[in-house]
Length: 76
Image 1: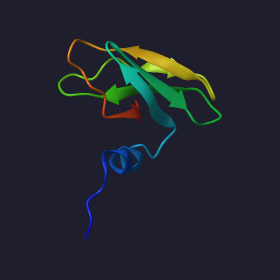
Image 2 (image 1 turned 45 degrees about the vertical axis):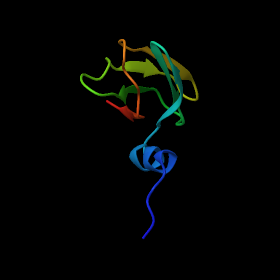
Image 3 (image 1 turned 180 degrees about the vertical axis):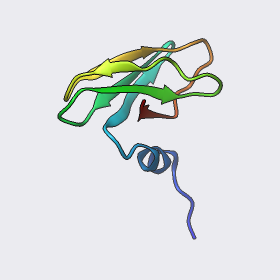
Image 4 (image 1 turned 120 degrees about the vertical axis):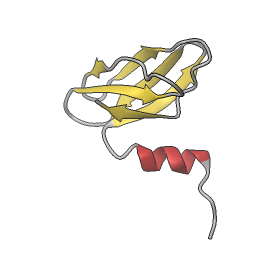
């Protein structure tokens, strides 16, 4: 039995419309892969950031706290 890579694990946790497409110091970008508006955020250690609304096919930016590293995006 093999082990899943981090990318494979993230894909497995992102079955819905919200997809983590990039991140850096203080921010994370979430893409809405569906044809309707969603609310989404990202999973980090500690408290997750507030949800934001993202239109169909659009990408939204979520602000992060110092030291936050997003693992995956999810709808909320």
